[in-house]
Image 1 (cartoon, one colour):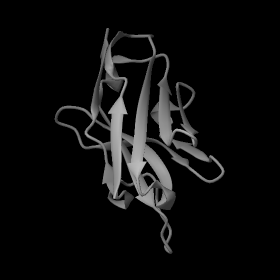
Image 2: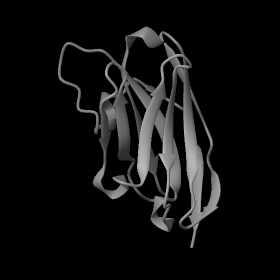
Image 3: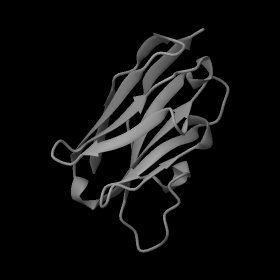
Length: 127
């Protein structure tokens, strides 16, 4: 079992920045990748970014490329999402999720691929 705890959400004006953290504990040695998803009111949960722990490869949805950066601190078992140039449309509850290693291909952009989820943190961007 892996426990994920997010922090760092809040209220920020458009153009501002926030950094989200996702601290993992438990059986983290089996973790293949950690991703960030977000869900706005009335919308489906959508993929934001993901990072593979071994090697650090990163993936982003098009709408955040160039503005958001995902990174990891292996010593702290923590993944960060640095969000710059925030827009009102970035307003959502942000969730981090982790997926274990698997013998089959893992599509990191799909929420069903993830085994563990945090409780979410609210990000509100005012115009």
